[in-house]
Every structure is written in structure tokens, then in C-alpha cells.
Amino acid sequence: MGTGAMNRKELKDFLDQKAQQYNHPQFITSDPIQIPHRFSRKEDIEIAGFLAATIAWGNRKSIIRSANNMMKALENTPFDFINNASDQEIEALDGIVHRTFNPIDFRFFVKALKHLYKNYNGLEGVFMESQHDSSLHKGIHRLKQVFFEIPHPKRTQKHLADPYKGSAAKRIHMFLRWMVRNDQNGVDFGLWKGLQPAQLSCPLDLHSGNVARSLGLLKRKQNDHKAVVELDKALREMDAIDPVKYDFALFGLGVFESF
Image (cartoon, rainbow, N blue to C red):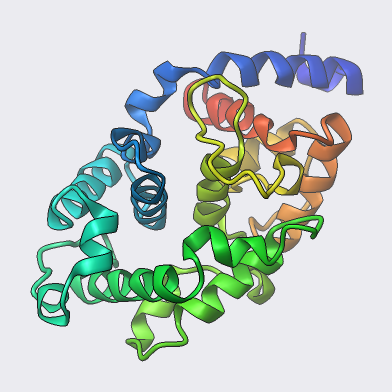
């Protein structure tokens, strides 16, 4: 069936089937989500996931390699390292480079995460301030505020997106999907019980954006915050409780099927 001939029910059935196809443990082996899947402690999963998501642009093999290097630098115990490392140990961190993310950025991210876990009950604690909001866009904005409230290199601010500045914030939305969704399929973790999948937004990138437009789910041409809001509305009309399960469908169709 050509997608142009699909009505709303047929489109939902098609995307439900594709979401189920790609929301499978086999997906983990080729995706940066494999990095947090190496850990079992909640804080290790959060930190590993956040750092892997932060550098998740470009070639996925390269992303995974760089994220593994990050974990090695943190002695494969990210929470213990971040919690207990001295300033000297943090300043000694070197060799982490992924595209424009360099050792200066990595050292600051370690310091900022230490600040969050000491003062805000960690990454989850920041987002719990938005537990009653309809989306987590305000939570992402708040994360950027508290992340950079300690002295920081100006260059590092670009590595944490802010929807309120117009960004699609693809990487942080992906991280939030990992932390909040739990459908027992074995991919997403569902660690953050105080937030709901209904609050999540689709991680919008070139692939998912192009597929969403070809399916009539998105009209806006730029992949920006306004496009995320538009896509949120379309996906929530298909599934108000778990709209971001369709990320698997849009991503899979774009990356694996060149849809």
C-alpha cells in the first residue's frame, strides 16, 4: 500500500507494526543505548546514558566507540567516579574527543554531574520538578540552567540543548525516552517512575523528520522545537499514553529502510 493512500487508522496500524518491529533487544547492539545497558546500578545507567546521548550525532559506530572511551575514563564506575573524584582527578581526564566535544567539555560535564548529584538529587531530581507538566520541555530548560550555574567554559554550553531557545533537543529527548519508557520490551529502562511516557517528545533528527513529513505527520520543514511540538501533537493523537514508541518506527524506517 502506498503511504499516500493510508487513512489515519491505516497509518496508525502501519506505525504500530513498525514500532513493534524495531522496539526489540536486537536494536541495542547497533545503538548508543548499549552503553547504559552495560550497567545495573540506577545512577550508573543514568550517567552512562546521559553522556552517550550527549555525543549521539554522526556515525553510530563512532558514537559507541567514543562513549566506551568515556566509560573507561570514568573507570567503568561512572557514579562512583563522579561522586568521589578529586578536582585533580577530574582535571587529569584527557583524550575524550568526539567531533566538537573535547576534553574541556568532558571535564566540565563530570563536574556538572557531580554538582547535580550533590545538590539536586541527580538528573532525575531536576526533571521531577516537571512531573506534572504536559511535556518535559521545561525540565530540559531547567537542566541547562542548573548544569551551567557553576563556573564553566562558554564553549561547552552548546553541548546541552534548550527547547526554549528553539532547539529540537534531539539527544536529550532520546535520553529521556531511555529513562522514562518501560514497555517490557527490553530496550528502554523505565527507571524514572515519577515521570510518564505521555510527557515524552520524539527525538527529532534528519531521519525521523523526513519520514514524519513523508507520512503527513509533520509539515514544518526545519527540525526545530516548533517541529517537535507539531510532531508531539500528531503522535499523541495516535497514542496519548505512549506517543514516543513511534520513535522506533520513524527511526527504523529512516535508517534501516531508507523510507
